[in-house]
Image 1 (cartoon, rainbow, N blue to C red):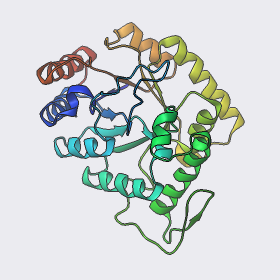
Image 2: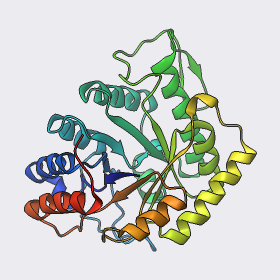
Image 3: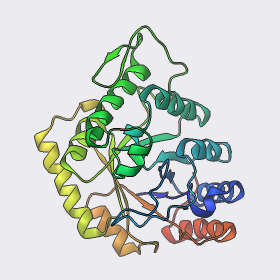
Image 4: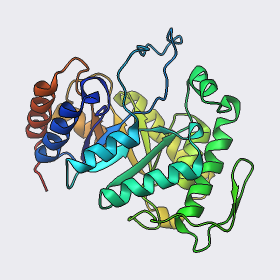
Length: 286
């Protein structure tokens, strides 16, 4: 099993010294990947069932990962997840390709369709159409990354007679990870993603959602070039799962566990958390 560290653009990690320290410490401790969240704005007051503080410190995911790329050399850099319908497809494709190049091919592109209607309204994204927009944007991004003469015509994005260089270092695209717990998200993961990501899932939820992904795999054709669907999960809370629990997640089909430090940790505590968690997991730096 691989292990990642989430929330490295939130809270204390929203300050440059802390972000650099936790990135270096996670790499030295043997973590496989660093994961960042995405919200352009947060509703004030919070929406029911989503108690995210409106003033929560949260850096832009691509800017944060570019900063972390400059302070590390090996660890993978993942968006967990970018809210795709809120971005302009070709602008995002350029940003992600640039990050992949500057990090020497370490990007993992995690995407979702979003849940926060006030946020999407504030940036002019159509909330009711967000799934269709995401599918169209992803197809457009693949086109500009992979076609010798990029051309695409969809319901929300159309272009022809253009080029966008450099392309991502990873070919044909960086790994694409799809987040979401709905049938359309499962279909998107099966047909378009290298992996699927579930946030805040206990073992029981994980087992149910992995079963739903398998069912989706029976209903939808998976392109052979995508390979096996890699399952990534962030457990609930902030405690490091013990060996028995890690083995249970692995038995449920999880390939990568992505852990979270506590929000109140200062820079020194974050550094210790990465080092101590790496030792507890038996990780070794590559």
